[in-house]
Length: 250
Image 1 (cartoon, rainbow, N blue to C red):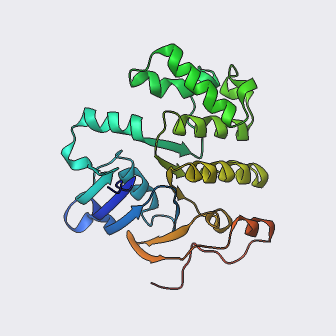
Image 2: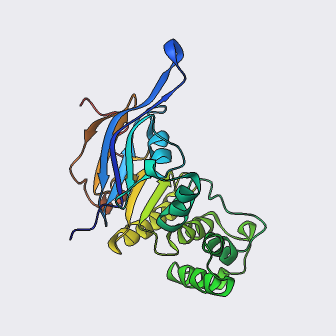
């Protein structure tokens, strides 16, 4: 029996407000992301990219349509059940890292596991292994303000993946990093996909989108185009090319 995809959106729309003042942030979006796949989402500011990511991660409910996480329909879950699903199945990586300043690197990573009922010692052990996998074993007891931007983003990535989460959602994860560190983070996200995770990356950067298996373009809340696989990461070695934020048409 084939396993369901980590993420599936069927006819998802999101409207804010009512009547003449209503704003349609998403319009009939269909999107499936399979295990091992990295999908980049691009589009102009205000096109609905962040709303799509928020709904995909169960942080926000669609007005119409359905979201499935590994085959489970989110509409059938209560608030606590959705929170449990997020902790167990979905990892988030943000531009500003979202690490807790008062916790060490290993404590930041272990915390979601402990919230899900994993005993502290086991959670810290798993967090330590996740840090080691990303080359930060020697910074386990460092606080976020003692780490570089790239190190903080690697900690955030370890937190997103610890516990064998199969869906990774990244919102401009390299926006606060220099190009070399951003490339390193993208290599780590690709490695997570090679290990079987699915990833959705929201970005304005065409060079980062070149790491994706496909690129979905969003405009006025609707998917207007989807590319075939882009040239590989070696394109990062060339000067910036065409701005993929502005596709010519559907």
